[in-house]
Image (cartoon, rainbow over all chains, first blue to last red; front, side, top):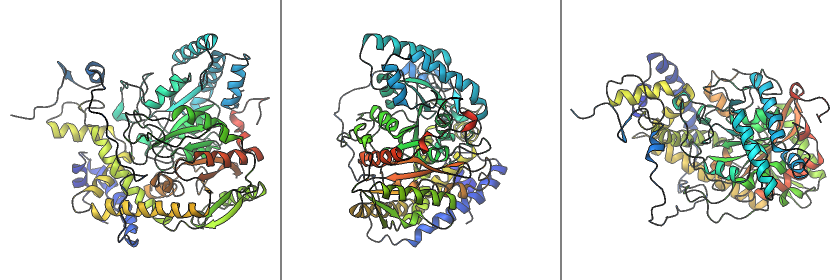
Length: 92
Length: 492
């Protein structure tokens, strides 16, 4: 299988160097080629699995249970200013 | 002592023969002596371990001992702990100190356990050999030129070499059972939803489950008992999970009336002949213990690897999108703009196998391919589940080899990702179906351990423990220790 690996990498927000793309491209092709095996299976009328035990997601009561831990949670951030995450400028 | 089980150590602590501090010191000394050759631990803080052991001894002096009072437990680097760094063995989490404990870690602390450190693993649990770790390759104590299996290879290696009496792992496609098998120890993957996933760094959320890796079946039960329970903080943690009498389930010494299914798809050409012979011999032993072996078929088994390598990477590509260099984890130097920051941070932070899986997932989920890959795989998953349900109408439990091969050489399968993926062929289907599974040692071939895998219906871990305890009581495979790490005078 021939995959445009750089395009897929951009969808996943990963910049690949040319040498990485040269290595990963054919590997991805062989993995996806193997996965093609799934097309042999007749799945007409079969429901896709949505949960391993076919269970519904529970609802929780609409009450606040977590406390404000901003400082602890932001202590691991690369760049924080006045409680805000600093990133490169997005709007001119 | 080092090769004792958790239960033995517990009896000695309860009898006042030894203190938690002495136990901790013994294992810390072994870690310091042997970790260089195994690379099983990636983080250990001696003073912090001793402080926990002292606190446990002080607690014991005043109160009844708790479930795991004073017992050393190592945990895979995938569990968030406030006792030092949590890296998931990835460069992208360099410098990350978790702001909270995983639910399971809280449970262990409340049970009085002494956490001895973080164990090596494949980066983000993506691998079957513990070779993709940012901390380097982990080794198998039975032969240090070989891999310990993966992704919980550090936990398996540490328990097998008695650097700790027990450890926690996680299992998304076999990551507890396969390394347990390759290192000659016992590993249990509970039913999906039995153990909270909160604070366990997510790989594939519909498959991930944490469990124990130990030197005996009873120890696995003891540790599971301390880990399980509903957690409102994990929406997939099941509130009304059927209760198991964990320790009582380990009292079984025979298999009278037990119907064991032997699926023909798990005994195939191409698997290691030695593995096959040992597992066949184990099933003969089960017959001698009173079990009836029933030939069964799980017809969609051959599609499990393909379905898994769509579903797990798809979920991983979504889960790992959180590593964007904004809130935590690695950020590249001097990004030009936001897109450059995302793409370069992720390229620099993730290793090759992680990228391979994210790209596989991104492709499978991308516009125009979703139906052919993700939706198709989830339909095949339903058929795999139905295979098991039909089998359990005929039999109580299923027995298979855990892995088609024994521990392979370091570097043997790293060039071809697909060959590596196929080494999980016997464990993946259990995760796809959300079932409990247990691997226990059942023989040796060419000097390397072979594992027997038990698979039970959902919530029936008691059946796994019944069968595994009976087998263990009739054999001595769990008592073996790798000679290079054994202690003179200790049982080998």
